[in-house]
Length: 88
Image 1 (tube, rainbow, N blue to C red):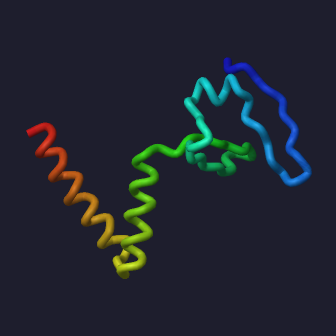
Image 2: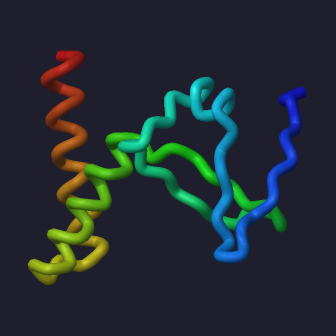
């Protein structure tokens, strides 16, 4: 079981991720994090490079007026092409 840490939010709701946790997860001042509620718990986790890439693609697609179905179709085509190139 993971070691439990107890922290207290500041008046503004800010929390500090303990140093040993940051080190274990490779969190630096440049690391993007996502936060959400899951089963009545607050979850904070590093954002992967793929998450950032997909977010960027999603924003560009919305700007250009693509529907979700069109975007998913394009992603599937690119994924299929990459798989063929990588794994022949």
